[in-house]
Image 1: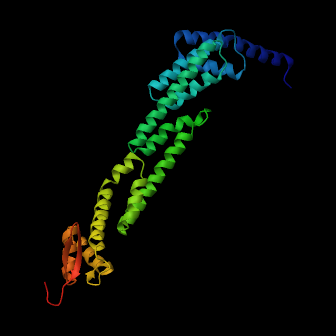
Image 2: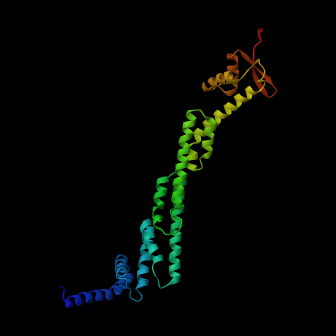
Image 3: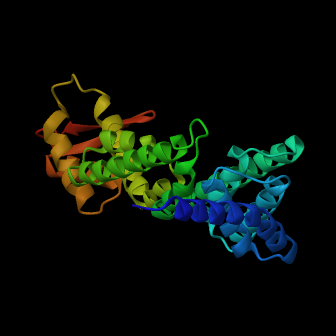
Length: 272
């Protein structure tokens, strides 16, 4: 069994160390030895006892080291120390408020940096930049990260759907997918697809205008027959108006113009 005298000796050593720690902490703070200052501060916190004036030195060391971490872009460690400052008991209430403001300022700056990365299409880097904020108890600290992920994935899926619709020549649906893209990087990536879709839709409109006039006249060539012939010419690279004229001739007709409208009429037996 441990003798009573040994227990007293251990207790005396602990008490002596407790008495030494505040002085060591203050000395490290005065000397600017932040590593030792933080270490002694943690030991004091573990013992749940701080001598008079030690709170101030401990906070000072944390504050200085947090700024060094921030300058070195060690964001996670900077925020970790700054949060401990804010959450810890301090003798100076006004200083604690300034520590709170500093934490808010750093967190806001991180969010702004992440948004810039996100807008430039650097999705993974943006999410990584926000990772240190996940340890924050601030309401909505992870909301921005969730929003960026949702926006990115939605635009990615719309872009994939756009390419599939273009391959199937479903132009109006493709245009709808284009208009759903709301991220600058994905919009820029889809510029070539937009040009192709808009040209195709304009060609369809031109063809429909040529077919509308006189469509009920039995001598007018229209409908699926003319549409198929026009589409064949368009796919061959012919301009819309030339495609309409060529398709009309191939089907045994000739183009007649009536004011702003044109249509394909079958040639009479006498020819024209």
